[in-house]
Amino acid sequence: MAKKIIDVTAAIIVKQGKILAARRGPGKHLQGYWEFPGGKVEENESPEICLERELFEELSISSRVGAYIGKSVFDYGEKIVRLMAYEVEHLSGDFKLVDHDEICWLDLEQIDDLKWAPADIPLIEQYKSRASVDRYYSSNAVEYCEETSEFDVGDLYSPFLENITKGAHILDLGCGSGRDSKAFRELGYEVTSIDASPEIAAWASTYTGHPVIVKSFLEMDEVEKYDGVWASASLLHCHQEQLPEVVDKILNSLKLGGVAYLSFKWGEFMSLDDRGRYFSNLTTQSLAQLLESVLNAEVLKIWDSEALLRGKPQRWVYATIRKCGDPL
Image (cartoon, rainbow, N blue to C red):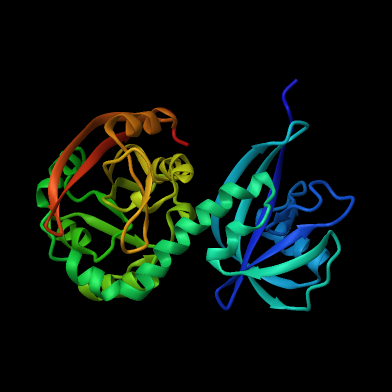
């Protein structure tokens, strides 16, 4: 008999740069373990409504649910928990503990010091990866955009553009400086630009003369809207556990027959660069395995090449995929 999968929500509440952790109280499942507060999603209840309700019931606080951070699936033996995490703003109310016996506020660097519930651990890693990237780009947006807007990557356009018709609608996903959005418009394409960093989106909007939507990869919710998705050197900041979900969202946003372009730095593992940014590195083999794990995708081409990046050789891996099968 298949185990029941239980949907549970988790709130990542940040105040003045510190993250809330709550410890399960005596007599509770996983007593003594720390977790992000939240609870079980009830029938006909959205995760967002669930979180607001649970935080009021468990901690007596009013809250507002923000961006989706990621999910973790963990088999506890008697049940499988699918834990979905969101950024949450504490609006009002003093914290009063019901299911927990202690709360604490942690710097990002302290978060690994606690004994966390197993299902929460992957969410911690996903949040650390995102936070490191957000921290860098919020402080270095202008420098980054000025530098990358000058990069000449025109030779990378052909494997993508040869698969879509002139005038097609392209999503520039993680548009950065807006360099590619600008180039695609000049070539006659309709372009929608998205970036997760408000600071970078503001710079790119000025540079391109067009609005840039502030949205993370995991917040994508468009359905059959685009003829092509250009994700050049952008998904490499997703935590590796999030990549299958993000590729699913890309395919969902494509019209039937639409094509997506993806690129990553070459490597076997996740890494942290000297600028404090996390990277999900892939090889041709691991990128092929990732794409084999998603539905409705036909792999058109996977290849790699080496180019100079800031004066040093950097190997990259690329893929183009087509949405096929029944519409999602």
